[in-house]
Length: 143
Length: 174
Image (cartoon, rainbow over all chains, first blue to last red; front, side, top):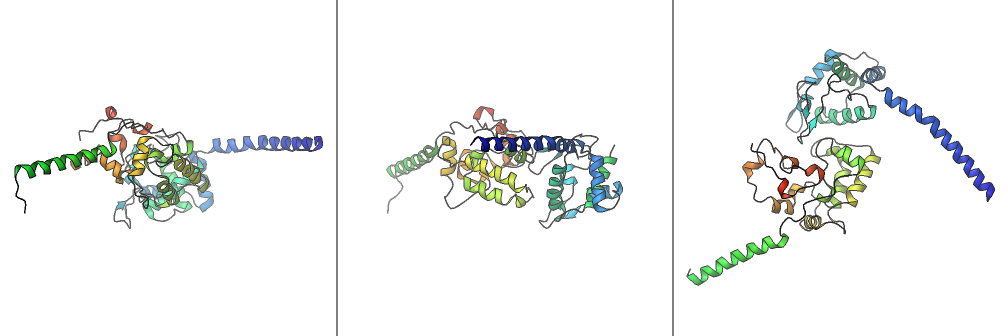
């Protein structure tokens, strides 16, 4: 019994050390995310440079949704990336441009979550990695 | 055939008055219009991203279950979440839904107004909501400051904390 307990304890210790060793890495990654390296990540994934010009066009492009509405990124984010937007349910959206909102593009999971949702809502398809790079490049160019 | 005489008329009036009294008495005053504030972290965070985090007690468990199973088509928008986050939120919502046995009086009134074979996705389409808002005329609903029936906080100033009591109501003038 004692041997079993000892073994369990040592396994626990090893486990705790492993977790402790992994933690700083995970935290550092989360801390390190910023608009510049998120842009770099999407550029890597798409193999192209992000273009602020293309991103701007993308942001303002209006399209006819299959539900009959005319939609665009600006429907909710407004035509000014530095302004506060509004969801369809009337809730405020903090500005999308990093210059006006330091939280933007600093959480990779959040960025992916919203690209997935909003690309589907506006374009009715997923966005390409290049479109994501362009989008961030444009947002970074807004001063 | 009965002609309209005084006696018939008074019976008719009494019937109308009586039935309207019964209708009112069926649910009575709104009572304690306070729901538990959404304290569950992921529910609060995810559900308040686009609208206020509605109290779980506004809909029965079967409604929440349906909603959490089709988040990719959430009132015409994609609100999809990672499966583990969605099921965590679904657990909280169903465990605190209108039809739980230990619910408040208001929760059981909401639940009792919903037919067992339906799973409404909007509280505003339930009978109890209609009962509580029957004095709000259509033109008020159309005011810019309200915009949508889903916009509770437009009039119920503390709705986002789960409180809908009468004295906190402030209806936008336009």
